[in-house]
Length: 273
Ligand code: BTN
Image (cartoon, rainbow, N blue to C red; front, side, top):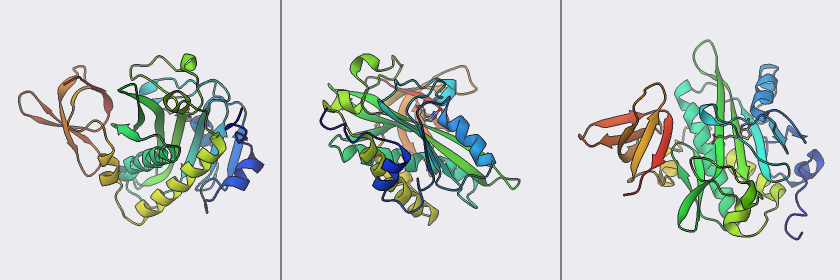
């Protein structure tokens, strides 16, 4: 089929396509794995280098946030983990890493002509028939050193590229793929190369002390909207208006009594106005 001939994700093909300096220069492709994040954790502990990327065509036990599963049929997605060793970064900056990845994903999607936004904290969304749907999820695993600084972080990216409508997962946040939202198949290798190039350049800016929060926050669909927040650790959901994010990307939600709540983690549902 025209448009997806350029779909080879093996080492030689990806190596010839990458434009990065360090990200993905240690690259491994596996046709099948449990979870790329789980595998990369072991490699991180064994000394894998900053910028290592592990990509699988299929995951039998793909993990999502909040202990959810991440499912995608073979041959349809970009499922990979990037190992970052942000030497000396304080633990609170870990959140920046998912923001950098979210920005890189959104921008790379826009290079194939589809405007992308974000749903707090880090879902990448596309508009389809007037509804925003999730096209990509990000999962960050981190390890801290004895001083409480980031030792390594693994950014796990699951991007629905060529999933047909019938294969989209039935999730609380409705899902889509680039194929379904854009109406044509997308070459996964070129998209991967674009995404890694953008992630490398966002990372370089952040490593130089440039906060990604303003750029990331500007893409959030969530701000200015009524939301319901299922908070991790507490029973009661919070209902209110998402007003802003703070310097770390926490969500600031004002309840009906006028009290402002800072949400560091949780699941946000956008409510109708
Ligand atoms: C979410 O939105 O819940 C996060 C989904 C993250 C899925 C990706 S796929 C590659 C990497 N390996 C995993 O097991 N999960 C992440």
